[in-house]
Image 1: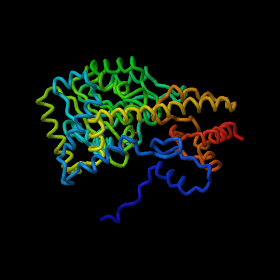
Image 2: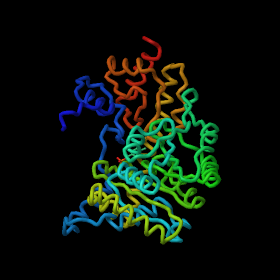
Image 3: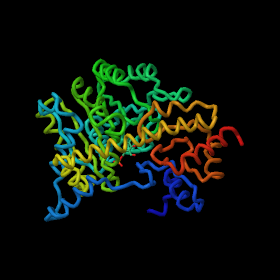
Image 4: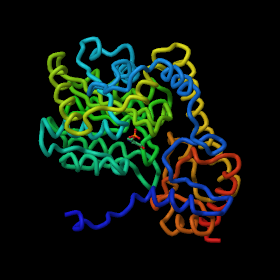
Length: 399
Ligand SMILES: Cc1ncc(COP(=O)(O)O)c(C=O)c1O
């Protein structure tokens, strides 16, 4: 049976990680990997997380199964983090949040939920979108539609084109949005544009689904949830896939949540039973360590304050690097305008390089990134940024 299978191509990012690891050039840079890095190039464990893990290790008395919904304290704390304290949907008890294995788990369970209620449902995704969205949604049986989003020429949002395209989906269709720090292009709607998008959702009647994988990395924890909060106020139903991988830096602990806003308490209770049965068929029980750690942090005033500071430090470092990069590129006399990097946010941006230029960066300078020239801004630091700018100048000017 299995001998009929042939190899599928590896994820390009994994190829880049392997090639970078094997490269002996001491100046090598990995710009492809999708994790936050500090000034020394590490992806550190947050101090708030370390402290909470110690508390957890002392407190934990059993490793027996969790129930399908996961750690209850995690679910309630994440719900507040997503919707804030003022949410009428929360007040009306129309929201349910279920712990999932990472944001990807939330996207997959969410897609299974959509397919359970409406098999083959159309889901509209931005062009471009995170590389895993389409495979996850297709695997769940959804029908992928695409709306324009990123303008390569101006490196900015195609807002009017997007709004025009979103006149097409209607009741029974789902539209996926990135809450902030769009992966891969780094471009987000402005607050007033979110107002217009959420108004359009109410007029057209489609169901918004929001992928919130970087809450706190763009403007702030509350600011970055603006889209979800607007949708939750205006639309009868909303689906949210939230991840703690980046903002708690617990990538490998697979910590995320699927949250749904429903039309009534009774419907919300019914929907939870469907979600629980979908997860039971899939992975049966969720993991504990990451969510229990996040639960401890978000229920401790001291650890919460420390964590909020750590999120803000990560955000400030990325934004600082964006400014520094723009400054250094201009100072190097590179003609091409890269000022868009400062207007974008989060870890990712497209550098607007050709595949040939990406190849030259890799082969001549040991600077690794994917063919689309999406770079992880957090990979830069004081030791490598000048080397990168020099290499960029060379490949752009054909030296
Ligand atoms: C846009 C987006 N959504 C979801 C995820 C999934 O995150 P997780 O590692 O929590 O599954 C990522 C991770 O890179 C992402 O960039």
